[in-house]
Image (tube, rainbow, N blue to C red; front, top):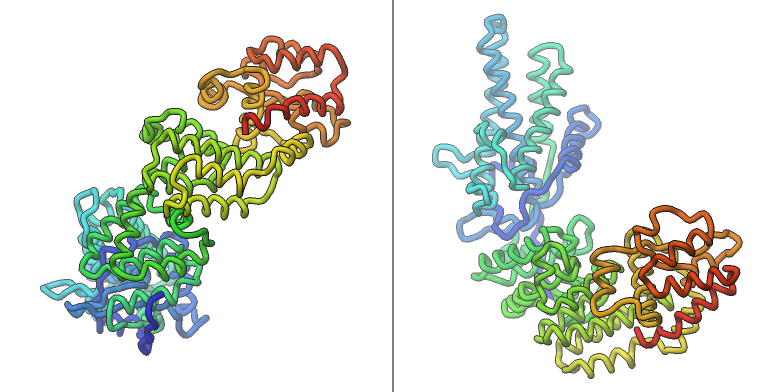
Length: 583
């Protein structure tokens, strides 16, 4: 953990004081403007409460900054509030300008023009002093200055939006923060006009606009903590946010890592951006990736404890650099594990096609806990053939532990992490060592799985993990028992081409629990199973047309006797003879 930092005495500012007295800058490493409709609606609702006399003031939140060498307040926490505040004041000013223009054009308003004009000019001047940025005067808030794909920096766009350049509202952009800013402006503009239209007179509308502005300007307040250094500011931010729900662990971890980078901050931010863009800048995915990486290298920890765990060990510039380097090295593999065959680049990631297929089978069954092992294997430069052998062992563990014995995931999650750490630290150096260690610590015994399999029931389903798990079980059992698939046919037919449909041999409710036993399921070509079967004899005809030997044997059983619970148990017992050969 960082050394204890004494938090400076917070300063309580009304909005007018906050913007008059400070120059704020949003550094490149901060996340972009992200407030959407829900957050803007909350902002407007709080303001309306004051305008309508329901409250006298509103605490708008906290900001954490530090004053850099250019005498700017670098924002560590609070940019969403400050950006929204600036946009809101720009909306108020633009509406005041529109009313003033209409007022001056209409001779009928001449008697009211002088007094009303003064009030409107006062609003515009107060906003101008707060936003600043004209005639050589620096803006009170500068957002990120990097250039987006559309060739314009976010700061340039933000400046135009808040300085009455209408092009900023009408220009089409693919930039999410720019679209969020446009949406915030339009929403607030619409809500203010709607509020003004409730007033029947021009003077009433001007007074309502003034009241709205002053309610925000004088009755919203913010607590600001300005730290003596960037490092202290980050530490304060972490302390205030690490237990909250507004930010994901990845957001806080990013700020912690950036706080350690000193002169390498810009490069570190570029690396982080490169990593997170491959995860679609999704905080949940980024957090899961970091948690998986940590489970590979160190230990498995909950998401709630992830920041505290990492910050205690990544505590200087060198460890922060290693942290980013590791993430950068492994992020492509992680995205492949999430989706092994889509897009096409993922399907080509490994040269070993069988490895990709095995990963796809695990993915379809929603098996995720093994990711740390594969990350460690790649980090320590195992060949693809060797990775495949270990992934097959992992599959055996999962099928025995979860699918057949239905045991919880905690043991597997911690067990796979333990294996991954030993691979990462070179305590397990080769395939035999790794698989022997897995056999010793994670594989349930043959007797255990045979006993459990004989009473195994599955719900089936026509999509999702339940479908693919049962399809995989039956296809592997059919291949081992009846020699139904050769080489890659199992994957290509059952998974890639998705040729088969799950069919319950009997749907007789009198079977009770036996209806969902594995022995009462089969897989049948989709062109033979386009409808439900009215009887067992009708199913028998379709089974005889199947290319699978298992279905031919099943058809003979159906022809020669009654299909009941005893028949199901007998068939299930026959299938169980291949369990230990496969898994």
